[in-house]
Length: 220
Image 1: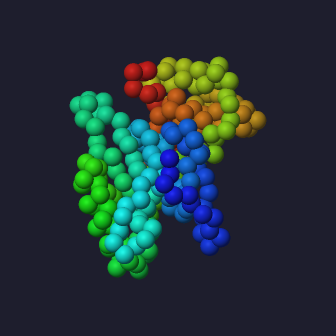
Image 2: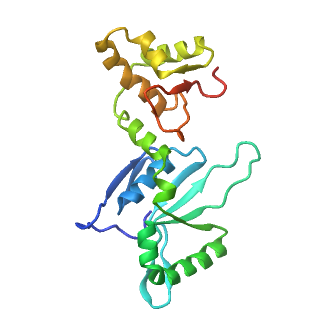
Image 3: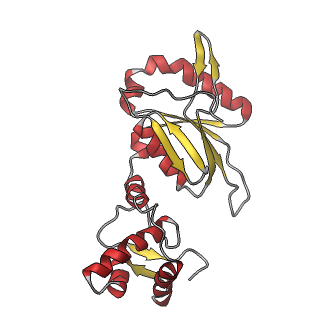
């Protein structure tokens, strides 16, 4: 439950982000925050995240300091070790540099706050957020609202399985779509399968016209 309601800001970007991981609408007050939430939503190590999670008392600042997001992680599947929750402030490098003195006390108090709770404090900027992974996820998210027939998704999985568990997107389309009309039908289904992790690819490499796809581990 957010401790602070994000007000409308006509000078910046505010709104709601529909999170499949949180199963609710998360509020953001900058485009950079929204983009960070998208990365969290598709990070398999993240269990859930909370926006505007806590207000930290800061001397001389009546309203205190409310960081942007608190991230909770799943236990490591191999070791069972659980990462510390991460309290995150999301700011552009320009803002951080321009307002360094303004933020210094807030960030210092945040470090004390997380140390008392066994958490960690992290400042995320656009260099960390605006990566090839983000661009790929933005592309895939355009296919989130379609509802392919299960038989179509299964047909794609079968073709990848016959190919040994790996196949390129162009190879699959060549098999599925002999005509342009067929291609228009199958292309959204193919990317929806990637979005929903029925197929897997390297999200950290910029997508090209031909993307190597494979079945999730254990399904090959």
